[in-house]
Length: 340
Ligand SMILES: [Zn+2]
Ligand SMILES: [Zn+2]
Image 1 (cartoon, rainbow, N blue to C red):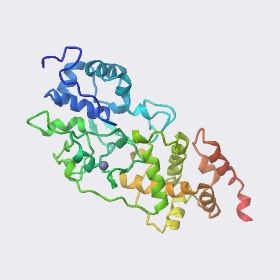
Image 2 (cartoon, rainbow, N blue to C red):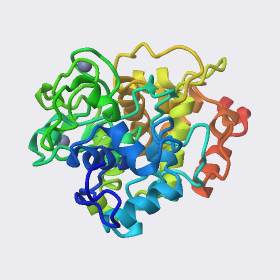
Image 3 (cartoon, protein in one colour):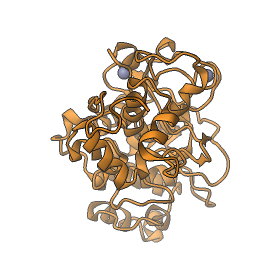
Image 4 (cartoon, helix red, strand yellow):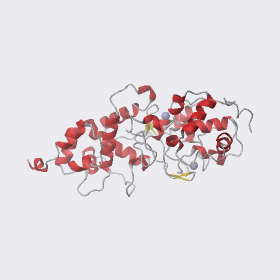
């Protein structure tokens, strides 16, 4: 046992860095003590308390958060803010333990292996960090770019294409030191800081500008910007769903692509949620949706007049749709109007 691990405050008691994700912080704490992540967690939480067999950033148990606060001296609200529950009321209405959580990228945990591409990163952010760490906003599905570096995020290792799994990074290391960063691929050892910068692709200037605004809200510094609230994120997600719906006679994606004169992208087949799609697909869809949102009523009406979307589809499975969206959709409820 490392000396001091039983004392109330751990010898190494780093606080979370700005917007740091719980898992990233936990890995840094383990490495700070010169321990592998699994060893550290077994020592302090006991062998019976499994930590990494779930999406810890979403499902961190209260006892874990309590211990982290107690042992590092970080205020409980700061610890809580490292979890994805912090987005409750902003990106989704009510937190859920299981199933899809709107806008939160799925890890698709299977034992301790990750199959989903649920943690993104900006190579330049990592390269510029004095201590590289992973941001909470990199778990958000519509957040496909880095505002600071004007570049695309990556959702997998550029060398071996494996999903990022920072808690498994110890598997590639023989010698652990306090300064070994978490930003290496657990599979092939590639240092994510070396990844080439990919510039932001865009179909339409105004749509990109709207998307940037949607992203600004999830940067802690911009929380006072009230242009984007829960209802806007919900409408955006609903339209992303309609874009990929497989109903007959629904061609909204095709319609928008024609307006933008943009090529379509082959999308992953099957009934998968937006939160499970690779970053290129998400970036594509969220841009098309943003184009609609720039001027929603006339654009969705034009789509409807072209028989690209139906009233019932716009509202399908959309509980608690905001009034302004309901009104736009209801104006499209009478198919006879299309004949006028
Ligand atoms: Zn960046
Ligand atoms: Zn790799």
